Length: 212
Ligand code: GAR
Image (tube, rainbow, N blue to C red; front, side, top):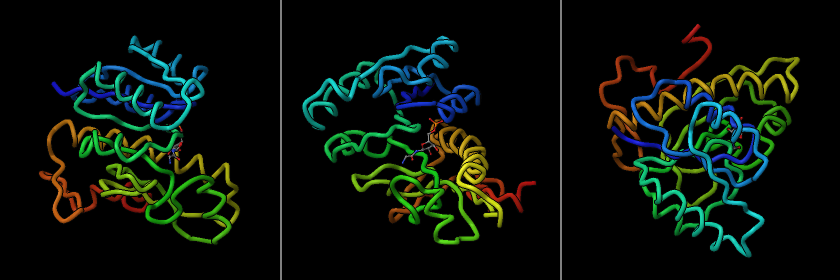
């Protein structure tokens, strides 16, 4: 059975979605970059081992990355899933977990990498917004895309209403992508990810219109 380490920095709702999805794998640990992260309590309630690698305790990114890698490697996970992990990871960290480091991001990448994605989507007047699960590369919020979910932007949307609908979709697609990884169904070809054994063409694109 494959195992997973989840990295968080805050609320942990994506972590919770992964925990409650009944994945075909073991969650070896949840590691937070912040001591008071709400997600730590949720993980503990589920009986999952938690650790904190406090970002403030290290003089620079390299030292933090090294401490984080040590904590991760002590669990020997097959997969590392960033779930609202709000630290930029250095390229040697990313390379160390090449092909087994996933992230969920609240936009339809490559649009709106970085922060404040919902406000920026509203500002730009896009009609479709959403979220993405992708393999992590050293470039921030970038890398081979596994699955995306589209959300219609409504005329009266606020940052909060739009964020809430996108988050609902994050909770659907992240467990799906992790499940595919656990089942060895993700294949790279020319920087694109194919999902083997997918029943329908639409499986890697969730859209409210397609999946009512
Ligand atoms: C989620 O919306 C996630 O996509 C985003 O932070 C939020 C964390 O919420 N991640 C990023 O912006 C990473 N670039 P959560 O802690 O409730 O899962």
